[in-house]
Each structure stands twice: as C-alpha cells, then as structure tokens.
Amino acid sequence: MDAQRRLELRRLAERARMGIIEGVFHAKSGHPGGSLSSADLLTYLYFEQMRIDTKNSKWEGRDRFVLSKGHVAPGLYAVLALRGFFPVEALKTLRKNGSFLQGHPSMKLTPGVDMSTGSLGQGISAAAGIALGAKLAGQDIVTYALLGDGEIQEGQVWEAAMFAAAKGLDHLIAIVDNNNLQIDGAVAEVNSPYPIPEKFAAFGWNTIEADAHDFDALEAAFTQAKAFNGKPSVIIMKSIKGKGVSFMEDQAAWHGTAPNAEQYTAAMQEIEARLAALAK
Image (cartoon, rainbow, N blue to C red; front, side, top):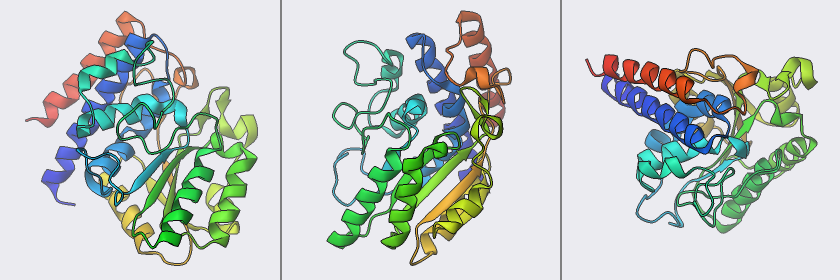
C-alpha cells in the first residue's frame, strides 16, 4: 500500500472514531470499546477491500458483510456513514425511537447492512449460509464476518466453523477482533478461547494473524485470505479495546459504557488532535 493511501485510510479511521463517540454520547448508551478496536478494520473493508455500491445497497454482485458481534453497531454505522450510505449527522440518532440506527444492525432499517444481528454467535452462521448460497448460485462474491473473541465462547460459532469447512466455503472470510476483553473482564479469565488459531485450524480453516491497527498488515492478511482455495479463512486480528481514546484503551469498563459530557469532550479533542497532525 502506498503512503498516500495509507494516510487517507488513517484519516478515515479517525473520523470513524469520532462518529462512534458521537453516537454513543448522544444515545447515552452503546458499546464504544469494541467499536473503537474494530474501527481500522471496518475502514479498511469498506474503503479498500469490499465491492459495494453506495447508490444501490442491494446490488446483487456486492460483497457481503455480517457484523456477528452486533453490539458494536456504532463502529459499523460510523463507517457506513463515511462511505456515503447515509448522512454522518444521522449518527447522533443512535438508539433513539424511530431512528434507523438501532442498538444492533437491522437489514430492514439501515442502508448498507447485509444481515440483522444481535445474539452473539449467530452472525457467523448467517455468513456461512450467505457464502454457501453464493457458491451454489455461482456468484463470485466474498462474504466477510466480524466476531468478537468473547463471542467465540459460544458453541454455535464452532458448529458454523465445522459447517463452513465441510462445504469448502473459500469465499468466506471471518475476522476475530482479539482485544482480549469482554464485558466481564479478560476473555482468558472469563472463559478462555485460546489458542484461537489452533482451534480454527482444527476445524479445517486457513488461519492468519494480523495487527488490527496496521493497514499494511490488514492488506497482507486479506490478500492471503482471498488467494486461498478450498477452505474458509479466518484472520485473528490482534487489537486494543477502546483504541484511539487513551482513557478507554484496554479497559473492560468501556465495553458498554457511554461517555459523559466531560469524557466526550476529552475523547473528541484527542481524536481531533490526531486528525490535525495527519493533515500536516
């Protein structure tokens, strides 16, 4: 990736972080921690990787994305808004009555959302079904699914993993946001999913590890995943919960807590300062 494109993506990811903070602050609820840890990945997918059409969100030939960890909808909404699916100003309506931006993604309400999600563990099953349908129909599309490392404690994840490998769904790419924290604390202490790569490999997946906050690493990981034939691929993405807001970073308390007015101002100022530095 050339330096200019890398810089553009970094700027977009910072703007996505601003959108996340904006949304959860005005909602007075939501999940900033995992949204922030996923912000770089979602920016990369929607601005660099996926084939989509913002003017026709239901285009049959588009790649598909399933947010299996649906509670980090603020992150997805921020990137969809930046990509042009709906106005950025709408992020302030997060979780409000009558808003098309509810606490979990809805394919019926929100432009750009391919699958409604909420209950943890179920999104990867839906993604596997979408990928199988595309394969049977001879469609050359890629299905992406983002899971949390706490989410993969759910048994349904491994049923879907077994199914996807058995069906040879090599156009399915799962990403695990491995920030090592869930609502109750460290995933290793709550119910350890480790070692994650070895588990997916045992279920027949091609496994890749990458730094979630390095666009060159993400590009290399997705290039490898898309080139692999015969098996689904999973990218275990090492990330920092709350990435980009210093007082939220690596803190389980920010899994599902909205900032107050003082914290909102501090967070926005921190991100704006980085954006200013990137503009020089």
